[in-house]
Image 1 (cartoon, chains in turn brown, green):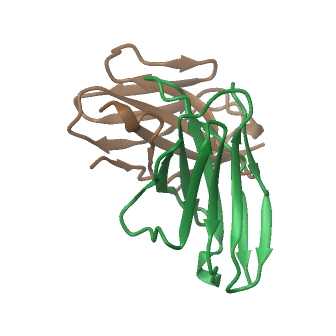
Image 2: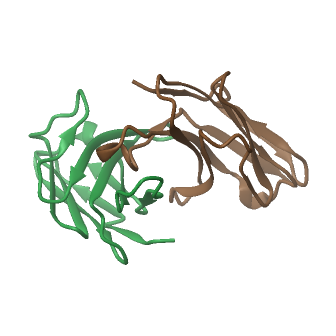
Length: 118
Length: 116
C-alpha cells in the first residue's frame, strides 16, 4: 500500500515571498502520478499541479513548481510570489498506475495549512 | 475542467435517520467515482470506489451496510448514510474520473453532514 507523508502541519509566509511545502511517499510501483491539491476555506478541492513519475522534468504552473526526487521519493511544492489567495490547506496526493480501477484513486497526505500574511 | 456537482452542500439530520448525498458529473461520463470522508483540518480518507453498473469496493474499516453506494448511471453516484449517528457527522467529498490513464479526478464541492 502507498503512503504519503506531509511533515509540516502548518506553515506561514509573507506576501510576495517564497515557501516550500514538503511531501514524501512510499510505493513499490515504478509508474505513478503525484499531485498537489489546494483546499481553501470553501473546501473545494483544486488541482494545483501534477507530475508523472516517468518524466524527469519538474512540473511548473505559473507561480507553482515542484521538486520531484524519484529516488528519494520526495515531492515538494514551491510557491513563488505568495499571494493572500494562496492561503489554504495543501494536500500532496499519490495515484498509482496499476491500471483499471486505480485511475483517479488518490492517497492523500495529512495536509499542510498555509497562511499568507500581508 | 470538467464539473462535478455534489448535492446537498450541507444537511442536518436526526440520529437514526438516513441521508442521501448525490454526486453528478455534468459534462462527462464518469466510469468511476470515489467517495472520501474528511474530518476538520484532517486528510481525505477514501471510503469506497464506485463503478457504474457494479457493486462498490469499500476500503478496509468502512461499513458497507452503513454507507450504501449506488452508481446507477455514468453521471450519477449516490452515498446513503443509513441510521446516522452523531459520529457520522463529517465532510463527505466525491470525485469522478472518465477512467482513462492520467485523467484528472474532478471533485465535487463536498457535503457537510451534521447528525443531531
